[in-house]
Amino acid sequence: MPELVLYRKYRPRTFKEIVGQEHVVRTLTNALKLDRIAHAYLFTGPRGTGKTTIARLLAKAINCENREGFEPCNRCPSCLEINENRALDLIEIDAASNRGIDEIRELRDGIKFTPTRLKYKVFIIDEVHMLTKEAFNALLKTLEEPPSHAVFVLATTEIHKVPQTIISRCQRFDFIKVPVLKIIERLKFICEREKINIEDEALKLIALQGDGALRDSEGLLGQISVLYTQNRPQDKITLKDVQDFLGVADISAVSKLVDLISSKKLSEAISHINQVIDNGYDIIQFTKHLVGYFHKMMLLKVDPNLYRLVAPELTEEQFNVIIRQGENFSSSNLNKILRILVDTENEMKFSNPPQLPLELAIIEIIGLSEDAS
Image (cartoon, rainbow, N blue to C red; front, side, top):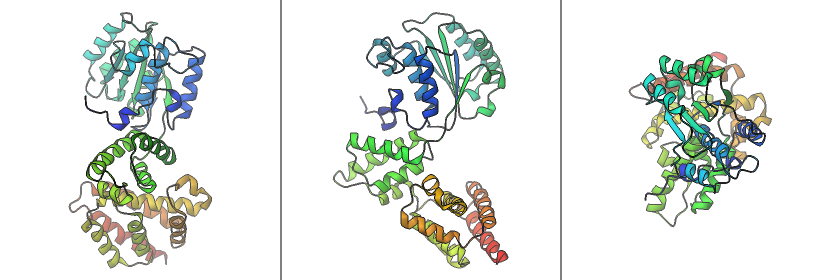
């Protein structure tokens, strides 16, 4: 049997293992303590933040035969069936590929029957916003008059596409991106368990690359660990290894470009961009990091005390550099620069060569600095 990927192997089995969604866990566990189970829940938020994981935990908790308080026991037959993906009464539907009215009608027919073994039949509908208008109407009728043995958990990354009539019949929970420090903490825990030898700076980059999605960061750690532990089992995975794997440049390369921009050295700035490409780095990822760098600079210019909140991954030396560089830009110019770079990042996906929008942006940004002076 093939070994599970890390994000599946370490999927939380209890509510206390959930990372970064304390507000959701607190409300759900209080409801479980009081046995106030709703018939329909709506989980909305970015991908990879734990919506399906918490939905499965909720299904396990309400069906647990030995539950004390809110945590499932993970030992009774009901818990084991759900953990091993063989519970007939836990039905997971991917609305992206089952979006029509026929599938929802089939669900409505199935919901009439009592659970095979569990106390509740739980229906988890992922990416519910993908349902057709007719399918939503059919689902609405089911949500209006659900049988007492049925619980629905709807999950979506695009809440604005879900009809208000559906939203109003569910208890809504908004999931947030997981903070970088909490992702790093979780990755360290997995590395200890899996005996993965990796630098802290490398873990920081993996966490940042996940962009608040814990699942993505865990998946990335799994890919990198497989590659480097097979090729170099005795060596520690370094920051350079992760940068090479991702095709991203070191923060020093971003910092150098910012220095060249503030010094109005247009020719050297253009050369630097092309040198980054020649070194094998992904120029779109480089631009993404450049946007993030200027974003941190703008916020730290407002208040340097925001350091731990907006830039926890920076070393003290990097923090001092970004503060110093911020003195060369006015707040209004930083706002304009960020708007230019955000548009540039979007344009690069369709440009050939991809660096052209960034080169044009640098010319425009240096022009801004000259106008201001």
